[in-house]
Image (cartoon, rainbow over all chains, first blue to last red):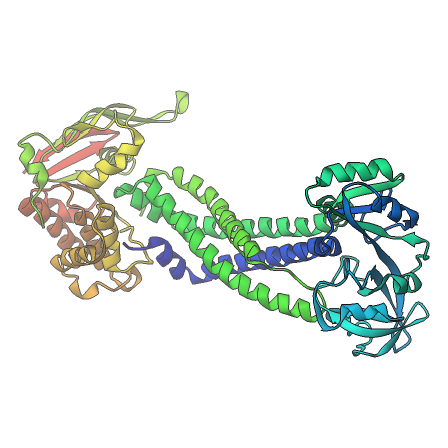
Amino acid sequence: MVSIARKNLLHDRLRFTIAVVGIVFAVVLITIQAGMFLRFLTNASILIDHIDADLWVTSKNLKNYDFGRPFDRRKYYQVMSVSGVEWAEEFLLGFSFWKRPDGGQESIEVVGYDPQSLIGGPWDVVEGDPRAVSGLDGILLDVADRQRLGSPRLGERVEIRGYRARVVGFTRGAKNFTQSPYIFTSLENAHRFSFINSRQVGYVLVKVAPGQSVPVVQQAIRRSVPFVDVYTQREFSNLSRRYWMISTGAGVALLSSMLMGLVIGTIIVGQTIYASTIEHLKEFGTLKAIGASNTYVYRIIMQQALIAAVIGHVLGLGVAQLLVRALRGAGLDVLLPWQVIVIIFALTLLMCVTSSVLSIYRITKIDPALVFKG
Amino acid sequence: MTANPALSAGPSPLLALRSVRKVYGEGAGAVEAVTGVDLDLMAGEFTLLMGPSGSGKTTLLMMMGCLLKPTSGTVSVAGVEVQGLPESALPAIRLRYLGYIFQGFNLFPALTASENVEVALNLKGVRGDAARAAAARHLSRIGLESRLAHRPEDLSGGEKQRVAIARALAAEPPVILADEPTASLDGATGHRVTELLRQLAREEARTVFVVTHDPRILDLADRILHMEDGRIVKDERK
């Protein structure tokens, strides 16, 4: 069967190029914004999602876990004594300062965990040993933050909030939303390195005993321990994500950019396809005159849009991948799982199909006399 | 080329118009373009429709081609009254019974001569190699066997019109409607194209109806209709 759609597109190369460039632009914009949105969303609750705790006990009315407020350590013991709790662990998270070798300072987030149980500790250690933080000054930092923190090597001594620390390992993928590097260390060290005194805890992590219901134990802790909030892992993760992505406006800004990409892409493609339709109006009228049904003609318009969509999507993804690499080099990680690529392809198709609606509408209004005009 | 299926219909007209009227607009601004036309076109007849600009020729042609609905009256194609049919049924009528040739050729510039003809075959359900072979056959028959792979921009006016004729014939319609087919052609080429149309009527018993201003082709017609102010004022048979 003669592909009028393909032939028309290739015959009109300049116009086709403009349409494809429009789609590429939209795809790149949407892909990068979606990838950044996903990365920020993941980072907004990365510790919570990687810690195997059923419940998180926090101070009252927290907005997110990065900005935690420490509370009395005695509550940790109260939580431990609640029926249905298999174990409870202290967990610390607090801001501090890292002294760079060049004299500059970097804001960091100190993560304190129990090096015996490793609960709350790093989940992907690429070098060193997470148990080695049990010494007086052991710390682990993320490989992605090495350069920013003065490129310390394994075993090198560094300075945190005026205290001496020693690098005992490197983690991977421990990036947070605040962009302050996570520094993993023991609970004891974390108290020294952060501003949280030793009579306080940041959070209490709880594992519910086998056979016990998480909501029931959650309620029991709420009843037994005053002036704290108790969240399931999912609830606390969502709370943090909502705060960073919605309350701060960061997520809304990224989603707005995505939407803008979609709108701009739709306008460019729509305008191009519509202009092409107008130029070929007489041909479409002729097709109808020689016996083509409306559906046949609409299919040609739709095929033109879909061919442009597929080519635009493939090229757009290629450009987006190059940009992602460049952004990674600049320290901005963009997350692009295959599901996002599939969704963006669906959005591209939607964009192109929507773009052709106006053209289809125009085809329905063809004056039959048009085909008889010389 | 296959035999004309409409021939089996006997002496009844292939295309029949009864009291056909077309009014554009409403109220005081209404213009009556065609006023009560009765017309029968028989198989094998080569008919010319002549008349001054604005006399209603194109409007009549559009109604005969089921591209425009009459305000009143009936148009029958091969015995089927088209007014009663839904809009969605008309493409099938046009595809089966009617072939068009336009003054401006209306070829698809992105397609080769062969592909332009294949489009009509595709609509009829003929695809792939069969469509290519049939297109080549139709184009060879009118002397364009060496121009199959050429696009319209590489063809002369006469060649373009012959491709348009091949396209009109590809679906094997019993009726060919042509609008000023020689207007864009020089005298000799126009005459050759008209000869070809007459040949289609004579040898294949197709009904060929041509709207024209071209006095050079009058001698080739079996029947000449004259239209003025929306009416057929003269019907000459040779």
